[in-house]
Amino acid sequence: MKATLAGTAIATALVLVACAPRPDVVGRALYDDHCASCHGLSGLGDGPTAADLDETVPDLTLIAVRNGGAFPTARVISEIDGYTRVREGRVTMPEFGAELQAGPLVLYDTGDGRQTPTPSKLVALAEYLATIQR
Figure 1 (cartoon, one colour):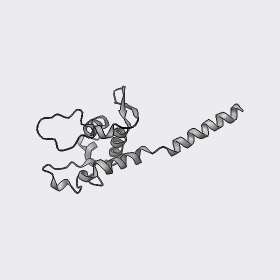
Figure 2 (tube, one colour):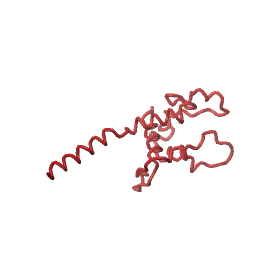
Figure 3 (cartoon, rainbow, N blue to C red):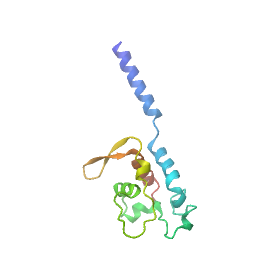
Figure 4 (cartoon, one colour):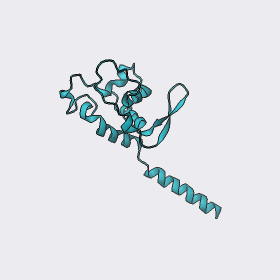
């Protein structure tokens, strides 16, 4: 009986993991919903609203290049969220923190050995951006 219960629990866990949305799919969907209108479907800064803005929309495929070859995940999360932006002058990019707070938190490794609870949607979006780097 114990073996059957354990087997059932393992099978249930595997089904739940298999049914959970993949982070890359979630990140791409969030990108399409929140970023593609300005940054374009490929992240090149050529979205349909980019021409209407006063500032050049950054090419998101070059984030790592602009950072010496490393993708700065924590800084990207912060930029998307908006909580560390300096409020001097005009900021064109909207803050998405409030929209992306819903849902579970994940422990995000900040790179210095610390882990901080971070909204899973912010992490998924940043991880998607890491996959489109040139």
